[in-house]
Amino acid sequence: MILGQGQFVLSVTQIEQSQVKYALYELFYIQNEKIKKVWRIKEKILPKEKWQNSNSKF
Image (cartoon, rainbow, N blue to C red; front, side, top):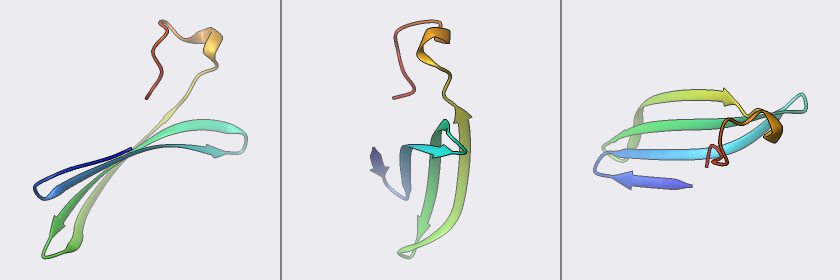
């Protein structure tokens, strides 16, 4: 999923590293049509049986 408003773009994706699934959130700050700053958050996605509710990261 990609969302953008003004000079900010948010990317939300699911990745897998070493057979572990993660939610990856990346916030980009755009200035003069170039990426000036990036903030990243990577959070492990637990197995479904360990979820505290039926919502997912997405």
